[in-house]
Image 1 (cartoon, rainbow, N blue to C red):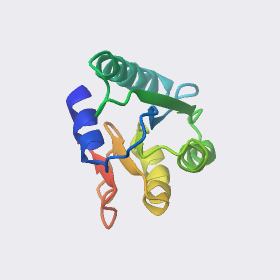
Image 2 (image 1 turned 180 degrees about the vertical axis):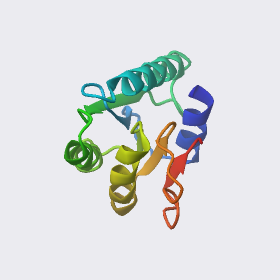
Image 3 (image 1 turned 90 degrees about the vertical axis):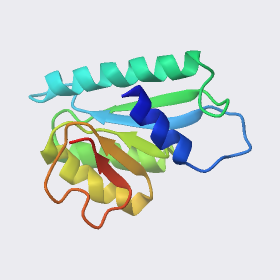
Image 4 (image 1 turned 60 degrees about the vertical axis):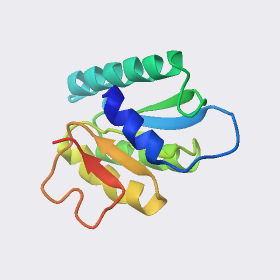
Length: 136
């Protein structure tokens, strides 16, 4: 997860500011899909901690904004909207499960935010969406 996250972050444009680099995580942390979401978030937190301990990305620490989808489609949409519009993240990690990724992908694409899901594979998830990626 750490190598994949670093690869995406290094591909983003360089900004002159030295403030923390905002990234988002959107996972089911409660509800029926929570076991998968909690495990993926733990991996993301570990990767962010390791990256920050090593000096961040291009000298900027990562600042992780986390949203819980509550295993709900509408709350998934709201969470992705919030991360993109309010938290101003450039990359969203997650969500878990294909059903939630299919809700999140068009929003991330429309908002111009990279989205990387480790477990949310669906056959056409990335079709015509150059900002949406899956590891599966």
